[in-house]
Each structure stands twice: as C-alpha cells, then as structure tokens.
Image 1 (cartoon, rainbow, N blue to C red):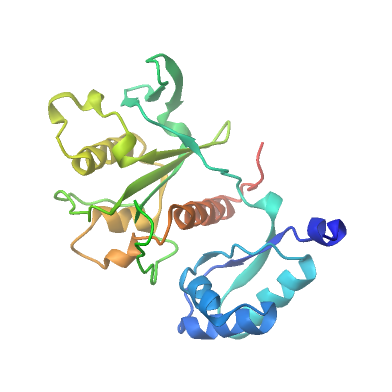
Image 2: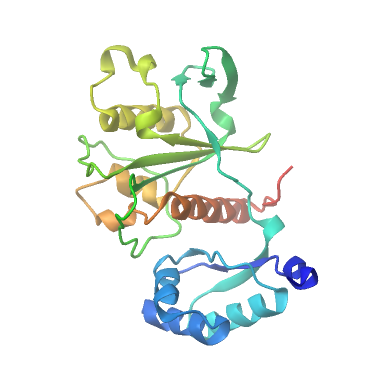
Length: 263
C-alpha cells in the first residue's frame, strides 16, 4: 500500500440537500469515483449527509463540483473538521434530575452529570436490530425548528428499534443509547413493561429538560409518527444513523459559527 496516497485521502464530501432524482447523484458517483452502480444508488439515497468515502483533496473537490453541477449543494470537509464520534459512549443507566442527566456506571456509582444546558444535540432514529433487515431512508428535511408534539406509543417492528445519540458541548462527548439496553428505573410508576414506551418517556423528559438542544428532523419525525413517512426516521444501519448525527452536528455548528473540530 502506498502510505503517501493513504495519508492524503483525508477528505469527505458533504451533500447538503436531497437530490431531485437520486439516480443523477448515483451517476456522478459512478463517473467520478468509478463506483459500482448498486453501491452508488445506496450512497445517493442516504443524502443529505456525509459521504463515507475518504478521498484526496483533489478527488473530493472534483466530486463536489460534479454534484453541484446537477443542482445539489456539496462541499469538502477534512476528517478533522467532522466531529469524531467513534462508537459513542454507551449509556445503560441514567436519571433525569433538576441538575442534569445523571449517568450511572455499571456498578451503580455516579459516572457523570451532564448539565441540561450542555446538551447540544439530540438525534433519534430507528435502526435494524438484526442482520438482513433494511429500511429506506428517503428524503429528510435538513433544517427546521425543534418543536415537539404529544404522541401515543409508537409501534416498532420486533426486528428494529430506536436508538438515541446526544452530544455534550463542553467537554465534547458523544453518548449513545439503545432503547433495549437502557435502565429506566428512574421513571418509577411511569415505567412500563415495554422498552419502546419507556424510551419514549425518557426522550420526552430529555427534550423537556433541554429545550435549547438542536433536535434533528429524524427525532421530530419519530415523535410525530402517524403524521409523516416512517422513512424520515428509519435508517439502514446504526452506522448510517451515526453519520446522520455527525452531519447535523456540523449543520448546527455551522449555523452558530462554532468550529466543528474537537477540543
């Protein structure tokens, strides 16, 4: 392997809008990157977002320019400009208190307390829970106000389930919650036998305590189920949800003119 070439491939292309016809974007990926048509259409249907391919600066700028020529806004970002979530810090036990979200470690000791005003972003999506099950992502709005509406319990297929990412602003930390692996004992009498219902109660508490957090379109679609397409909050994989969260954190920080690099 040529290490000089590998080291130079440190750029990603960020697509900021949904293409009118994903096949147009797929064709650009085929022509510029030599991608297989099937892989290209999968990439195209995940837009808007950060394309996963690591490219040289020259190739990334070439791809971004070609995408802009079909009328879709695109830009180049280095790996260092994209918030690095790794796999996220998994939360298994939490408690919503007046002071903040208390995260409890496996043995019951306090691990950290995240003040409510430090929660920068909240992102929820439904992801497959077992191999072989896929969901279309379709079109997703990029920017809009973070308003929530009351909702009834959401029916989720047994092979899929909601996952939540939330971001602490300073120090930067990315947390991830799997609805089935979370301890909801703090809910007390509100606690249900359903992990999905408990997750929704926890999400309601999180949103109520952190009203200034940026709430992604997928989260609002999840809360407004029954009034919009499920494809707005269903993702093909947990990794696709992670990249979606990264993308919206970049949008949030760009809107506030805050650097996206880690402290």
